Length: 253
Image 1 (cartoon, one colour):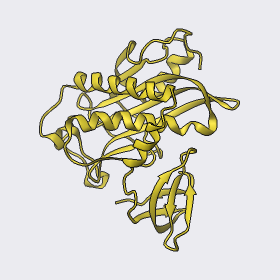
Image 2 (tube, helix red, strand yellow):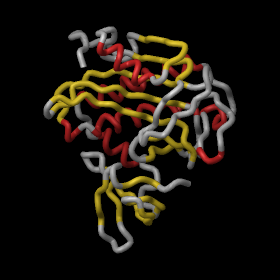
Image 3 (cartoon, helix red, strand yellow):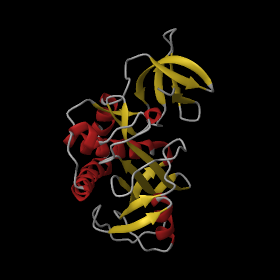
Image 4 (spheres, helix red, strand yellow):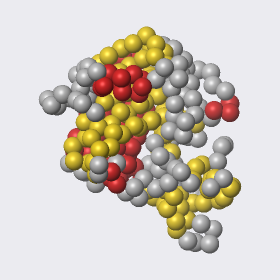
């Protein structure tokens, strides 16, 4: 990921496009052309083929919601520690949602943000790995801001529905950039508070939940997330195990 050597602040460079397949895909193309630097924000009015963490289509209404990617250069981050980027990003988005919403706001492993039981934001992270180091990352964010209608099967909501008022998207974007700057500063010093806050906000923590393990339905109790990003869960026999997304996911609600 060839980025400029100067390290500007997140949000100094903002690129707005009317329509794109995916802001992550566009960001990758711009990086390849050396047209973006660390902290660049690529924002789309409409995204036609956005994806969530598990490959599902991310649905956002044009001009109503935020669909963007933030490009980051990651100094001296080892591959086995890369999940800290998911924690950092999820907490930044959580901060934004909590600014407008009085209800319970939680992070659903690995990095969705929920209001109550309904999804308000999804994050898709693409890391560039060279050898044993993560050299850069693209943090794709879909945040439901002003949409009002969702298929019930999606179990989704928006800031507007939760707080009762339509929001100015540029104000939401400005706060998102600010929160990413704060959380990025914590990441740079490897602040242990990031992991503690993430764990404290973990959705279903300490409660029995319906999950799918290697294709089979199970009931497990989420407890924590380890440094590799695996969910630590208690089985009904009391045994604690760790599973990654390649084996475990929450069942559809």
